[in-house]
Length: 375
Image 1 (cartoon, rainbow, N blue to C red):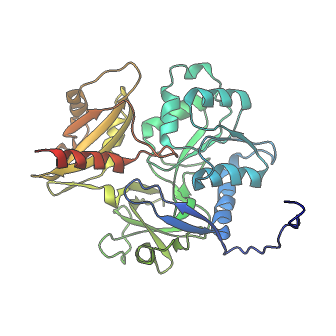
Image 2 (cartoon, one colour):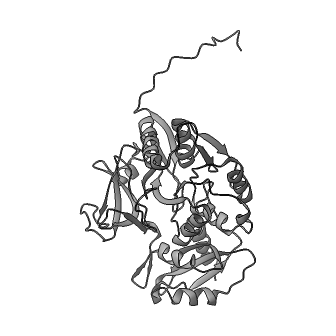
Image 3 (cartoon, rainbow, N blue to C red):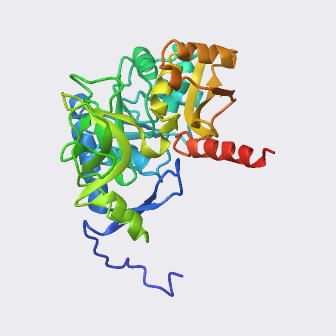
């Protein structure tokens, strides 16, 4: 081959607006789509990440970042690989998330930064031998891809004495657009404030043309340098989400008087039961308060009378047992009557994507398949 071909590399010019990658969306609520991201999109977010982490950053070249998410996904790519390259940090890479291996890696390599998803922090909190490991090197973690229950955040911060900051991002704006600050005032249960150069607003769900007042729920729209060019070969779906320079995320959210944003739920995941709007995240937050619950997911299933009814799937902590009645009674004391789960299923595990995000869509499809088979 060397004799037949010129070994000199070809001369290639790459511009900031050239396509860098196709990032396929998670497919948690529907068919996965290819979000087209440019080099500028990706690099802008890496510099935003560095600005966010700067308050606790050590001298460049002395930092270590723990990477347990796949680097082919934009979340791991930006927050672990690109962030480490930009800051000269060491990367502590594990091929997959296995709780005990992660604990050993933190204990041995002393990483200060550990980006992840809620299921990872749940697993660490619940590990029976977690107290045997020194996790105090952890200074900052950003949690994304799914809502971070307040109980999980509080427990993890107690274990590490570091900051676990909930953030928000999506494949269409790779990858983080808001986060709670590492130092200073943050708000548990919120997704924080926009990153530098990111604008965010709450728009009415019906038309998407009217900005909602402070405290009211609407669709989150963002304008930022990391917003994608569009979906590959999907012009109609691109036009539906990219409007006049703003990306309409499909997520229901609200903004408080301090400028902190909170995700209420995805528009597609909202449950409408008997005319009432029920947000799965609110139910899940209550379930995570139960001492026996390790993981929980809430979703709507078809109901001939109410339109939809609330179902939850639960993974219990190791060695624990519970009944559906126990769960519903616990929820009844903390939720409005129409929000209390009518169906409770216990599972050994929940279906997840390679990033660790619970695949709610799979559970909904299972329920629909059951109904189709019913006589």
